[in-house]
Length: 409
Image 1 (cartoon, rainbow, N blue to C red):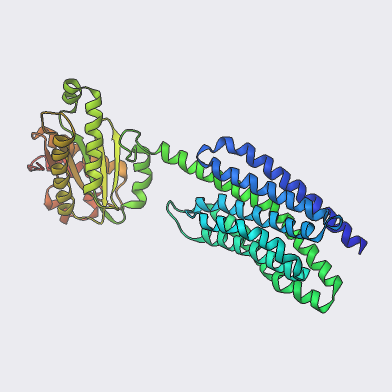
Image 2: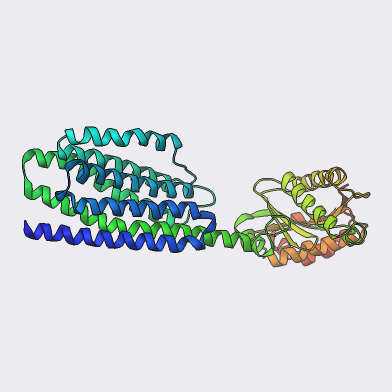
């Protein structure tokens, strides 16, 4: 029994140390995640309240039962709830406010009714609360979400699921072993529960901090791959996503706004920037949800339409031209229509994106040379020559010089 007590005391001491470090690390980490500072404050507060609950449990033998067990359990359950409240928003869930308000009258009820119950039943009920909270967190992070869940999501789910499993197993075992009067088994159950609790106090803060760091890295990556003016993907993101988006066959479009320099010269760069934003919104609104759209630089844009035919792509571009003309008239002071020229090319899985863009660029220049405000495509004859010629956009583009393109507005 003395060895058992010494082991429990050691585990309690380790638990106090790990929770103390969790509070310090979380408070320190908060400065690096301003967008999630609220969540990290919840975590730090939860660890601190758990720590207080553990300290009360350590001194429970020198306290009244309602304080040594009741208040301690109340602090511990509250600590878990705060950690969960900080964690769930990462998975798109939020702790209902009504649940928090319901806990206010539940606390005095717990302290009033709890001492009247046998100690094992009291422990089992508090364990059920803890297990329920952990199950909710585990389920939240096991669900697929957008953007695609990262590795930290799975880690958080595993840590909380394992902790929930231990407490769910403990709920029936504690009353049963106590009813059987098997004190050594009851001591072993307490020791194993405490040992797992110490592991959880180490693993949970590390998993949750990994979650915050992973989200920050993902946000930085999105910023690095997003055009700041239009909100579209930039060149880097376009090349990175194109290989996975296009599939076996796709339509590649290279756009260029006509006479854009004259808009900047006549109306100013602010007006030019607004035209670029309007064009980006028009393209995003008229193209399909699976289409990849990017601003490559200046007034040059690109779009990749997976599984679309050349005629379907052309119809979408005509819709973009109409939308652009209407929005420029209604949203700016420009006294001229804004048009674009484009090169439209069919690409296959065997075509590199660099070669495909080179071919579309040749078609775009042909559209400019043929009077602007039009879309140039390769001659339909080449659609029947197979993947070998489609993999050589330079040859296709040169042939297109002998065929007039189609105006889009």
